[in-house]
Length: 188
Image 1 (tube, rainbow, N blue to C red):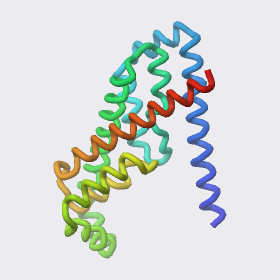
Image 2: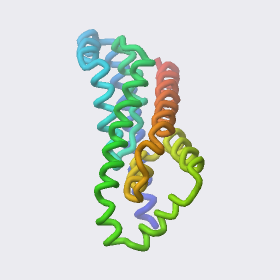
Image 3: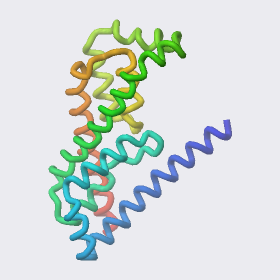
């Protein structure tokens, strides 16, 4: 039990440090022209890469939107940053989905009871899938891979949930980016 709390405290500390780091980086970029030039050189592809790396990292769930103010401080457009973050995270989610899809046989053989239990989700109406995918990806502060990997394992086709996933990711990054920008503006 104590180990579980210890792990939760570590995760919260890492997220807090990441947010503090994002705040510090934003402050630094705003006051140093060479840092602005460097981030501008990375530009929108840098935002996409950042989102992909943080999106694929299920170990440390740092919201990529918390770095949006740093990109804005470098003179980049917030709406385009949000689109790049959404694209990068969605690409990371697709990697997770295909990982789940390619591990299906392994899961069936090694964990047949778990597979049968999770596979019962396929019997539910499609609208439930849309709602769950959207609600999870938009509002749950955990990696989307926790949802898309099992969907790949049980054989859902990506076309059956990609639209709610992208819309939810866009919603999440919009809220996170605007929230981070508002939070950082309080301290500047």
